[in-house]
Amino acid sequence: DAKLMFIGEGPGEDEDVQGRPFVGKAGQLLTSLITKMGLRREDVYIGNIVKCRPPMNRDPEEDEINTCIQFIKRQVEIISPKAIISLGRISSQALTGIKMPIGRMRGHFYAFEDIPLMPTFHPSYLLRTGNPKDKWLVWEDVQKVLERLK
Ligand code: URA
Image (cartoon, rainbow, N blue to C red):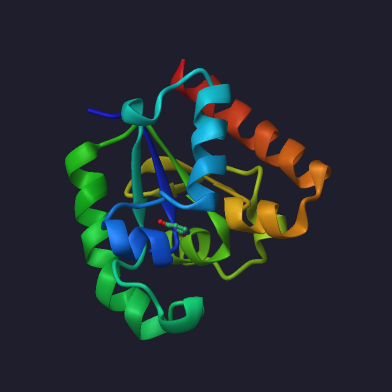
């Protein structure tokens, strides 16, 4: 019965070992974002587009995304959240079908299965660049979502 769903790209090494999404470094940053939003991790539902770890952490390929998309679609149907936050380019493009750079998509609402969807930067990207400005943009994006959830 989560009102908010986060959808990432696919499992990394830690997630592969534990069989749970976002439990590594990126997951820690995601958890701190969720906490700052005034929520707990157990209040939200976290999923991924692809369910197997792509070798060497490469981007999932089109056919892998097309094979897996049915699973997240079903997860969305079952959870039926009030809003979705897609993390990063792969997830945002896969869920909207729009092939735009994440820097242009973020901050604007789209829809997946008639549910409002907000693309934002992936926590791994934030960790990689360490750019405080991008963190603020994510903060702005999630504020818009919190406003919708009121
Ligand atoms: N990155 C993702 O996109 N998903 C995870 O579960 C972990 C890292």
